[in-house]
Length: 366
Image (cartoon, rainbow, N blue to C red; front, side):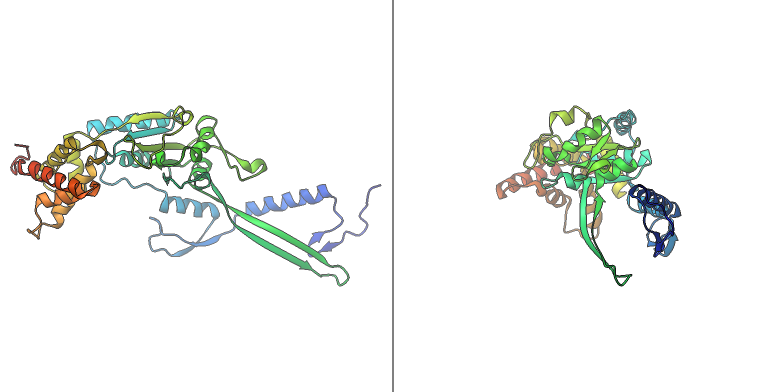
């Protein structure tokens, strides 16, 4: 027995007496038409094409592009190209183009992050960022449900018919990894060895099968096919100290590892000059002193190229104050990795000795 419509009733524009399959077909047709409409949205985004932050009507797709341009476009300033830098850049780019994630390993302050950001900029894709931390969980990587909304409808449109409807809506918010996999962004996972290995298990299927699993979702939404433009650059410290976790072998087996060390003398001098615009003789003196100190200290306390830049900027800031000398600037920068007063005394003697043996004229150690 099949119901035949003799008087097609409509309540508030909706047909009644529909079968389950007819209702589903109607809902799908309605949702499809809503997606095609692409309503205009008024947003305020400061980007290179909208520097005055004025309000403008743009589509959802245009809004997405504007957000990428304003917040996800990497800026690699003060990057210099020397033969050893170009060689590292070429190796990193080669493996990314081959489809493999790259793990940059090296001591603090050797330029791992700067290299990663520069290569990401050359790729020309938006970049998302994760900083490894002891407290990071899988949800911090992939996202989660941010809020739950209860909606109640009490329908008394017809006086003798009372309809009650309770709906619970939950909203999913993507985090960096899911955004990168979904839209083909470049993921920079900085100091990823600081994160507990269990939290990084979600990367296994991403790097091998090209599938991102969202454990808290259900059905078809549980899996995301990784975008073909997705790239991943991970950095970690080569020195084992507190807060470092050894990544699982299964994850390391899916990545290409590139070991980076401190750059050579000429490259470090060029980096200092590019960042501070100081005279070459001053840059050479700073780099020679820092490199000499680096040879005398244990691995965990070695000053990196960043220390050279800090000393150079300190020299610029103290140019009008002769009370602060070069030796004191070096001591202040090196003291950031001091463990005790006795250690500070030893480092102060070391800095004073090396700085005193540095010729002001040619920057060489005498």
